[in-house]
Image (cartoon, rainbow, N blue to C red; front, side, top):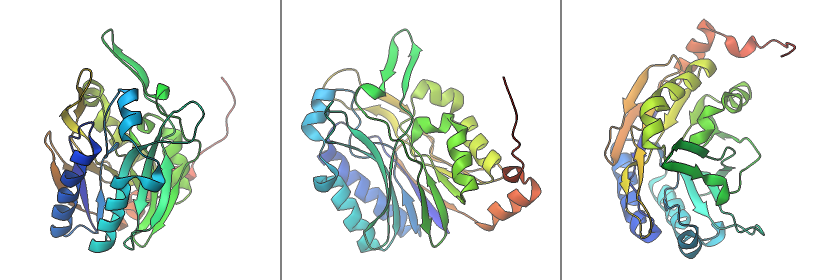
Length: 276
């Protein structure tokens, strides 16, 4: 099975981002990919909550979602929309950071709302409070496809291994980690975290990423790490998307999951314990 990881450098303008995303999806399909994945916040990357309220839409009328569903149907592909920022009906006005798995008929096969919010102090001058604008999800999602079960996650989730173990023990053979990973923490931790999640669960990990400096109408532009990665169940990095927008193609031998788990069957070795 050939997968295509789409690496983007989106702005805070969903209408401008959509044609770029569609073009790269078409290039991935032309390269033979039957499963194509885009990064977190494919439609809009912004920390300006007022601007987000102006440009984001509800799921039912989001033009990016509609266009990508139509394109998946036209091409006959499985498409993971890494996530979209979406309006919700929440009383506090917070958005959803929602990942979608789209089937080759254009239907929504699965939805997942990012569970873990990026509320961190990277440095004295760089702080993030994702939970101020986005409401966290509360449900793990496993989706069935003809090529295997896919466990969905988004970005900061990767630091919480219990989520991935639950997904793997429920049958996941592929874990998706679309991201807009901070460039500082990405340089230090991105590859190590993704390889760890692959190794400890005997799963493929597919992680399409945002990259570079993101144009913004207001405030300081965000920078993200890039380096979309595909990692094998034994921990090898199969493909690295580098630092620029583009398409990374990778062939997955799904029998590698069985082989890795047969060599180290740690998913069946959990033991109860007490303390601390």
